[in-house]
Length: 191
Ligand SMILES: Cc1cc2nc3c(=O)[nH]c(=O)nc-3n(C[C@H](O)[C@H](O)[C@H](O)COP(=O)(O)O)c2cc1C
Image (cartoon, rainbow, N blue to C red):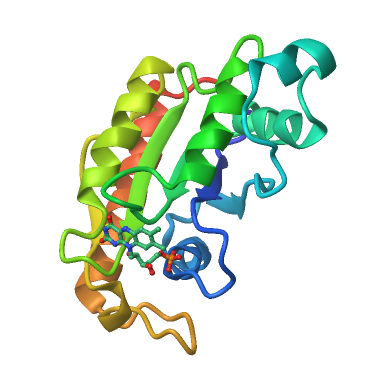
């Protein structure tokens, strides 16, 4: 029998414990369609800065291989990330750069969805276009719509409880996860 479960991993672009993006990520399982399982990807916090000399001399650090294999094994990947200085947070970009160097790099053909929470009014929109661009280079299949930009996030997410209090935001996330499930069913396929 074919397993209809869709396994998705989330990569959180913020390292801080009280991250709003992490709160959004943690809210996703309850908002996902019933056939979608969502869990956090292995961490990238310990990745060294990408250096081709390190790659040449020592190969890929175990943590890089762990994330690369998790991406490869997943049916889809969701990025939950803030915008830093109008672009991709450096730690996350470094993680993508490392994973992109793994042979048969795992983002190729991988369904990807983007979500960002930021304190600016645009909710990380500028970062998302840069992240989309990196995903284009990696031949990922990035969901176009619905887009999730949670602007003024401290007013829509309760920092104490981690709950998304803005019901319109909750609705948009539900819609995106449903669309992502359909997108994966149409275009997914593990490599
Ligand atoms: C280095 C840095 C750069 C930032 N740049 C932006 C930015 O370009 N646009 C924006 O909306 N917010 C920016 N912010 C504010 C973040 O939106 C805010 O700190 C947010 O809470 C970070 O996400 P997190 O809660 O998941 O860590 C920046 C914050 C930091 C620390």
